[in-house]
Length: 472
Image 1 (spheres, rainbow, N blue to C red):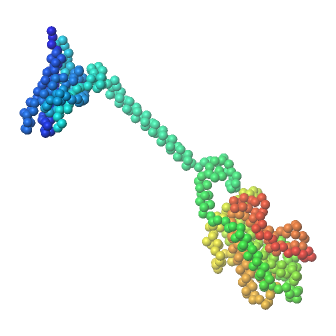
Image 2 (image 1 turned 180 degrees about the horizontal axis):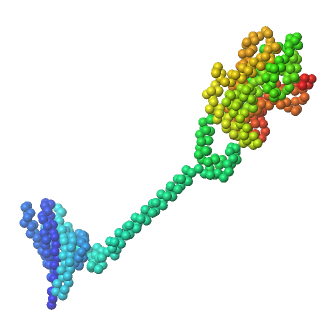
Image 3 (image 1 turned 45 degrees about the vertical axis):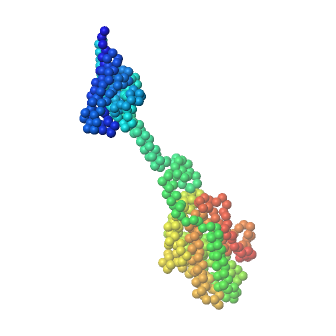
């Protein structure tokens, strides 16, 4: 009968109780006909103690470990420890290499085992895992199903695919960024401030234009309220009325002996006065109507010269503004658009000219002084014959100059508003034939958005003189 002999080769590391580790020993354990023979290790190299390690039979190898895949066996207590026997330092075995050959007479396997001991005594009895547990087996089942070349190809392909995906995402982000920065085209934009179609910023205006407009809107000063405007024109009316009553007389004798200077009257009228010069001459000559005529002459001289339609040679507005107003003849056929453009131009121009013309005082170099002095010269020539001799004539002229300059400041205030204002000198139809407007109404004809008002709003009412049928 043939014998079956199995030989196990171990590398054992012995650790003494005092944690002195001796050198690795290679031992051979032999199993004959399934009965594992004990092996002893005598380590004379330990200086403190010579230890004999007995690896008992039955380390737990159910089968020899796989030929090429080393595994770390799990630990379990040795039979000697279970019996409570005092044993040499504990041994831990790990199989690293094994080979098996089976014939009718012998079987051989190799392994590698490390043996260690702790202070607590023996705790380990190595038991290599079954090939099914460690993923190992015979040489045919141990081969890798994917070759190294195929694995490299898969890696390269994955990298290329990832690069394409990243590039596509970057392209989408860049396209979206360019689209957000590109000004939107408008299908149709009418820059009248009210109606526009298409895409883009507010009102259909491209974003870059709308952002610039927003900067301008934030920087522009707030419009004056109605009370401020109404207060200014009311004070101007009161100054004119008080001046006429304080510095002019109603003496019939002197009035009949003095004629009216027609040249001065023509200079004041400027060709668009609401009454003809002959009628005004009659009213000045008559003591009963003279005071009303004087008030009309002063008010007309001051108010007509702050109107936006006044000629630059006579306007009390800054000459830069008056000249531009005359030159701005475009869009007259579209009153709404024309008003909207003028509204924005006025507010921007006034803001830029505020430092020069917005102060309450007139300097000697103020360019408005020229037209104011010309108006004062013509007005003084016309009214001097009716001045009260008992009052200081220089004071009268100074007060008259203050009225003209106050009117000029009020004119710049109205010009700087986004709303549009007109002075109404026209006599109402229900006033009757003998009525004369001696101070105009102030009408708001456009709102703060530059839009034409459907119905003019009177902020200051007209002042009328009635009972002049025989003179008009």
